[in-house]
Length: 194
Image (cartoon, rainbow, N blue to C red; front, top):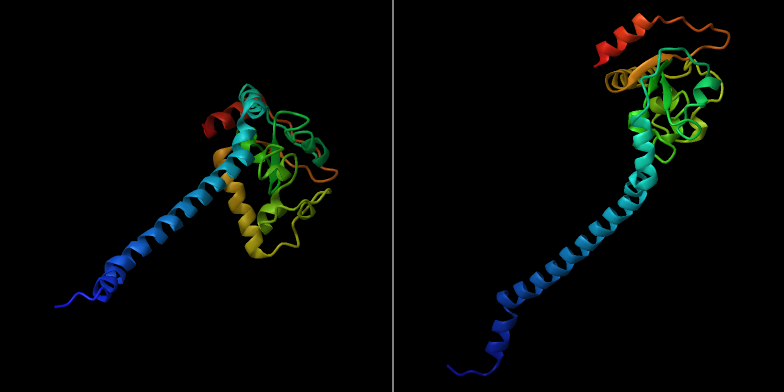
């Protein structure tokens, strides 16, 4: 058999040569994906990790040092004071119930992804899965225009908040008088949650 040089060329370009080329492309693709993943992780760190840095850690420590809040009812105006910016304690209302979400300040604090709900009635935003300030009302919201699916969603959110956070009182309707809570009721409810 004569070696004309062509056979050697065909052999080098054959399956082994193609696999080597594909392997190189796969390596470049893998390195590209790794670079993208690292960039995404770095951006997430800048967005969320930096918040729990020196200032965020101080805020978390401050929140952890707060005593349990005594049970009371809130008007919308009173609720707004507890937005995590003016006051380290963070409250929000869901379906007429007010919860202390301070221990979730990473999420509900001023810099958190759900910070828009801090110090407000979050019911409509949670029901409609909308994080725009326009979805929240500045006056009492009776939620009467929500459909059955949205109202069920509000009730489910309420149950989740009850399981995870301290219930601290009711959101008052305009003209409604606050309830008087005894220390015994307050202690019993806090013990039941633990």
